[in-house]
Image (cartoon, rainbow, N blue to C red):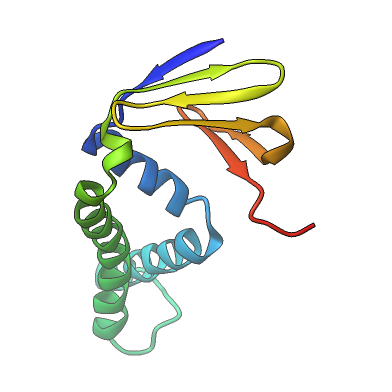
Length: 135
């Protein structure tokens, strides 16, 4: 099987958001921030909430959490993409029974299936994890 890819900055950005929000360390604070915003808005709308005083601080913290996480992912992806030269090239992957052959415009690499630690399929991505050493 042969697969051709070329990852532009928008695709890389979507990938970074997808991978970041798969982690509990990212989506749990986002949910907490959204709940802080929701309960604060409900308080100001006159509904009964767990707050005894106006939740100005909770509202600010909620907006900060909800805004800062996506912004930091965006900024990091935007900053890192120009330095990931291989990702910007057209890459051809050839999968055989024995190995994977990866050919780009400036490189060529082969790896045996025995070097593969894990293959993860996402909706629009296939990630191939290589062994990181060890015995």
